[in-house]
Structures are given as C-alpha cells and as structure tokens.
Amino acid sequence: MRPARIASSAAFLFFIFIVQEAAVARINFPFAGYSFYIAVLMGLLAMEDRAAAVMIGFIGGVILDLSPSIDAPFGQWAFVMTVMGYIFAANRESVGDFSTRPAALVLFVSLGATVSLLIFLSVGALLGESDGNFQRILSTSLGNGMWTLLFSPVILPLLSKFRRISLTSRERK
Image 1: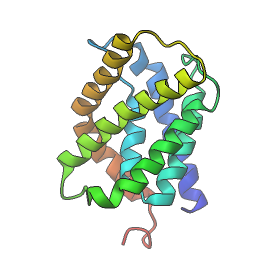
Image 2: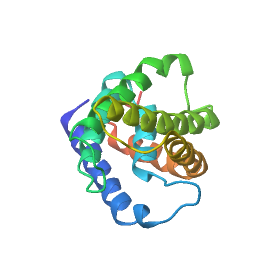
Image 3: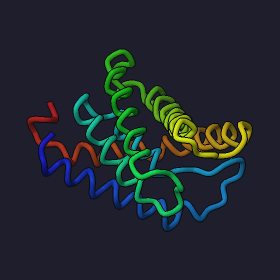
C-alpha cells in the first residue's frame, strides 16, 4: 500500500469519525446504538487485500481510540481493529469475491461489526473493565449488527467508489 493511499484512507476515516461523533452518535436508535464508523471501517476491511486490511484496521482503531465517549484504555480499539483486519484478510479468499455477491458483503460487514464489538468487550473484561450485564452487552452488539445490516446496502457502494478512486491504475487490475 503506497503512502499516499494510506494518507487518503486515514483522512477519509477521520472524516467519518467526525461525522460519527458529531451527528450519528446523537441519534437515539431504537433497540441499541449504531456505529456508522465501525460499519464503514468493516466495509473498507472487507474490500482490501491482506496487508492493506491489517494496516487500515490499525489506523481505524487508533482513530476510534480518540473518541471522547469511550472509557477504555488507549490502544484497545487499535488492537481490536488490527485483529479484525487480520481476520478479514485471512478469510478473504475463503469467502470469495464480493463484487458478484453484494448480499454476502453486507452480511460479512454486519457480522464483522458485531464480532468487533464482542471482541472489544472481551478484551475489556480481560483488562478488568466493567461494561454492564450480559443482557445489555448482547442487546447492544446485536442491535448494532442489525442497524449495520440495514444501512450497509447504502454505505458499501459509496465505499467501493472511494476505494476505486484511491487506487492507482496498477492496483486496479
């Protein structure tokens, strides 16, 4: 991944982070909250190759660690998103090409968003954080997955266009 693409992806993720913190986080979604940022990050991870997925996962996690609403140690999200980038990269070939199966991409992204929240909470529990009872944790994770599943068909085509713009002609082949 070339440095200019890393910078453009980081700037794009930072912009999405600001939209998440300024607007989306203020909306009271029924059943549970929705993380637009995590949905976008999972979409980017699903579209990238191995090295780029891990790198974007780390960058996205560091940006997510900057959130003032998260009461967690700095670096916890960076670790979780790096792990998610690795999981996406390792399983990318077994899932296949998403360009011919957009429904599989939507399911993959919403499952990834749910799993990333569960991994975050598991790592937090290992670090001694108290995030609430099991029912609240499960409803929040599944609610976020539900909203991601509903909004992903709108988000993912736009992400695909952004990714195509950020690639060079050599990388597009």
